[in-house]
Amino acid sequence: MSDHFDHTQQAPPLVEQTPPTLRPSARTTAAALLVRFVLRPVWLWRVELAAVVLAIGAWAVLSRQVGRAGAVVLLALAALSVPLWPWWARASMRLVFHRARVRREWSVGVRHAGLATHNDRIPRAVKVEPIPVGDRLRVKIPAGGRTSELAEQAEVIAACLEARELRVLRDQGNARYASVTIVRRDPLAGPGVLAWPYREAARLSVWAPIPVGVDEDGQWVAMLLPERNVLVGGEPGAGKSVALSLLVATAALDPDAVLITLDGKLVELACWGGVAARTVGVDVDDAIRVLLSLQTELDIRLRVLLRSNRRKIRPGIGMPLIVVVIDELAHYLNGPDRRQNAEFANLLRDLVSRGRAVGIVVLAATQKPSTDVIPSAIRTCSGSGGRSGAQLRRRPTRSSGRAGRRLGIPLRRSIPPREVSGCCCTRAASRCGCGPATWTMTTWSPWPSVRRRCGLAGRAAI
Image (cartoon, rainbow, N blue to C red):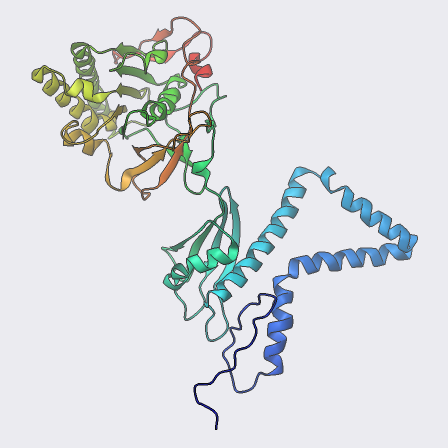
């Protein structure tokens, strides 16, 4: 009499196979075998099989016209001429086969993860979109499944796909769908300098989104300056001034924007002196006088909006955006004279709280944006914390070999925090090369609207 606990151990198969996901029954029917071993593989390889059938059909038609040898030669010439096709045709053909391969690998991966339902339905990729880091899939969850199950098996699926990471995000509008990102490479770890897309632009607008870097998906992240105040914080050498220079370069290339710089280190913003309406160094009294002038301008603009029945400025109404750039903000807020510190802090708080409606944008950078250095009222109005923050990581260079450092930079408030690799512009080439600027005074504003005589001076800055 055999022991109840005795089992027969079979040798493992030589070829790794997809585990059966049909619900076991007393007897495997012929229909189940047909689905598993014929229909399912044919469906997964349908694009490649269609290409093979098309080639065989073309050979059959050509063989009747020019013979078998001639048909083979013509098909070979057609295959060799693929590199001569237009780029859009080759890209479309590659995209079709790439999507078919990703769908096939995804189907195998979710079956290995055991996500098939009792009806043998799996989370199906209904849309495949290539992105710089890999692929983004729109997945339809079958009846009886949920997105949390897919997220729990993300590591198993990533191992089957030989991917770096698998990110699963539920569709906020429809629980039946999920957004799956297959990460195959890290765009934030690449060596070298990430070039700014607008480095060759002859003219920019501060009203348009400004690209500041790429996110974890390798896609560009943009900022909107109107009605925003930016506070950049990070350790020394983290790239605060480089991140700020992208926004300053955009303001310098906008002929309708007014640029004002307050440089606590004298050298970081010196390259923009040729295009700035006002430039202040380390003298706190000069900085206070500039902020007092800006406060007067703020009151004038508010009265103009009141007379014109407007709540905020819009492009094309004759009010240029005033971009105030402050590097080393702690220098002006933590000096030896407490009276000066308090006066500067009060004026700056007034600008960041009331200036957004009239087009006054404050861009500030400091090493430690904590409450003991930066007053909480300024930090709150600058959007430096909460959901508006992001981690900006500087890419390591081949020469230094240092790991990328991080600094905080506020983005749009509607997006969650994420890590962004910032791009860089060359500071040495950003000096004004066309001589002094020509100012055009408006009838109501003491701040000039910048006009340049021989082109935009900051073109070489990017």
